[in-house]
Length: 121
Image (cartoon, rainbow, N blue to C red; front, top):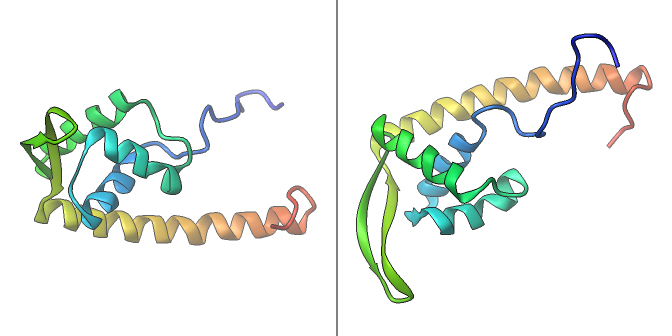
């Protein structure tokens, strides 16, 4: 391995959790644990639930998400999160950024494949 190069601890880019949560909340409101379960198809194995709650709290502080306490038929009250108009705008920004990143990474992957450094998918 080259000096200064280290494998990533996770295949997910930094902050990838945020657009995933915003997208899930755009589909429908949810509480932290349920959102954690819904993350798997989008982001692979879900991070620790505490990480999800911290992200939701930070996004609420930024006005991207709102929450309210809700009674549960299955246990104690829980906090239900939903997307705000500002959150929907942030999701659209993420969508544009991810599309640009997809083009950039796609070009690099094509070159790596052409040079035999990566197997074709």
